[in-house]
Image (tube, one colour):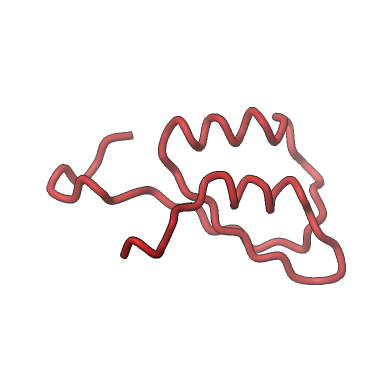
Length: 70
C-alpha cells in the first residue's frame, strides 16, 4: 500500500458510479469498510437512477476525509 514517499499525505481513492443495485457483493459492507479504512483508502460514490444503496453511502462517509483542512 505504500507509494509516493515524497507525498506523505497522498491517499488512494476509489470512485464508484452505480445505479444503486448491488448485484455481486461477496463481503459484508462492514468488512469492506474496515479494510478500506485500514489501508487509508477513500471511497467516493455517485448513485444515479431511482435506487439508492445506503451501505455504499455509509462506506463513502466512513472512508471520507474532512476537506475543510485543505
